[in-house]
Length: 395
Image (cartoon, rainbow, N blue to C red; front, side):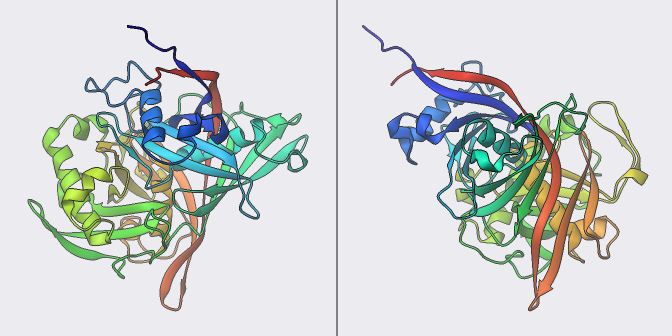
């Protein structure tokens, strides 16, 4: 029996923040994969190496974690005042499924760099030296993001001395602004920043009883609960949760019931088909702990402790979109994040995560009794790891 040769597709493997993903230009994809649908999903699943019952991604480009099982498709934007359209796909590790319901804030830091280097930004907007402002349309959530990319001698500057906890080596700093990040449920159809109308709700979860929670649509739909209410301190590292099957089931149960409360799904049975959103996170007041790298984190260096789940596992650092949710919730008096951080008005917060700390800022205000956020800001770094072609067996 004769087998056809592999497809050869131009691609770039990039790190953005604490994530890695395979980046494509839309018009480099096979014709059938240039539009949404089964052909695109099947191709990208094969690129990553999913589904993999061994959970290793040995036969693909994925890294078998939520942070490294990612794909990005970019194209010149047809929208006014935007340079590039950015579509993100979170690839399931053990299921034949790609979740298109949300953004990846970490990989956003790499979008501007890729767009500049691959001719998606008009050359007249790229300085010889300085900063190129890349206006990104995030197609998953229908939002504008602005990336400030350093340029040296007309090219993207990737090396530098900016250090980011969760990333081993320093690189050039990329500032990312998430414009009006609130009031989106991941489907781009608007809605309130607080979908229940409250900054704190009480809801019941089978097996856990009644819990307090802050449900917020900012950056990415996120459910915040108090660490103490579910038996944690907020200083946990990955092993404490990811090696505990009962804990993982508890968090998924909590996430599913929270998704129903937020109106994202009609029943808990639908949660399995929406793995990327909402996120579930737990918060606690500052405390000393030792990060996953062995770095001592002092309670005096942070405002709040936050741990977040991504694709069913505790994240090794913090998702960029969840960091936007943290900054936004911290800026609104009375949310669980704000209260854990000491309460009051604040326009930035330093939070402790498993790999270290991160500073994020948000500008929140009330308009006609409704809370809104004009933008959230954070710094990340990005660089090309490999570029050329990815090979995929033809079907």
